[in-house]
Image 1 (cartoon, rainbow, N blue to C red):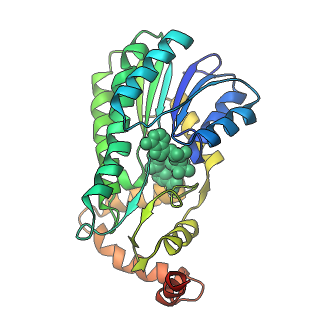
Image 2 (image 1 turned 90 degrees about the vertical axis):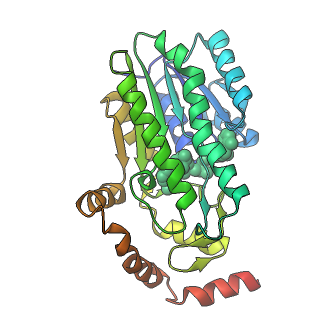
Image 3 (image 1 turned 120 degrees about the horizontal axis):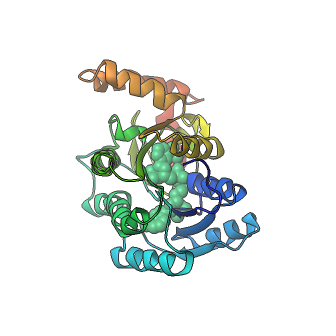
Length: 288
Ligand SMILES: NC(=O)c1ccc[n+]([C@@H]2O[C@H](COP(=O)([O-])OP(=O)(O)OC[C@H]3O[C@@H](n4cnc5c(N)ncnc54)[C@H](O)[C@@H]3O)[C@@H](O)[C@H]2O)c1
């Protein structure tokens, strides 16, 4: 895809983080946007920030019927999508032993099923276009697994598996399919997450948010520009951030042993804590 001018681009989870940065950059590139999110006030603020009147709608991507109704609206009002970016996602941080099924299903309904609905609902429209793209946002954690991210890892590996099958199926069409693997990006994902336990023995949601901010190396604007560049270059797998490249390499070189390295990483995380006393810090937070 040479450029996004006049292309109808659907973005889920557009009100914050990577989705918001994508919307603002695509607006500057004269794309026609169809933006959805659960957070309607942030979505309205985004539309104001663009200075244009893009199509916006409150949508829960886990609601299959609502996703198909939205696809019909994009077809009727905008002539169908050229690009669909299934970006909406949430995180849960908990060991598998203590993982609650409600949290597991909440995450899978959004991250995995939301991506499936967004893909299948819009595929007929994409197939009608002279060139089109479908982009599914997985994660670095769709390439390797870490403790406390079992649910998130499973959903993001599933997105990669689904998208790679789609790539093979679409080989003879004009549609490109891309799986996106960001490392740590400075967004609201940790604030919007259900955080119970994190690597390094960290518990409590504020401590989890603090940990996430220490290990996020890339801002959302940079992530969005790398993602858009990857679509234009027809990259089937788009890695974002130095941590994504480095840890992808570790996982390729040591596929059987990389999980052992996490005890070392946990010690490093504890060192990164300014007080070096994560537990005391958490006790303070939970007592406050
Ligand atoms: N931030 C990171 O470090 C990182 C790393 C790898 C992958 N990702 C992935 O990038 C994507 C974007 O995340 P982000 O970091 O910008 O997070 P974010 O929390 O800043 O933005 C996510 C957006 O998705 C929306 N959303 C959540 N559930 C929804 C639902 N059911 N229906 C519609 N919208 C919903 C939220 O309201 C929010 O606006 C996610 O799929 C996430 O898993 C993020």
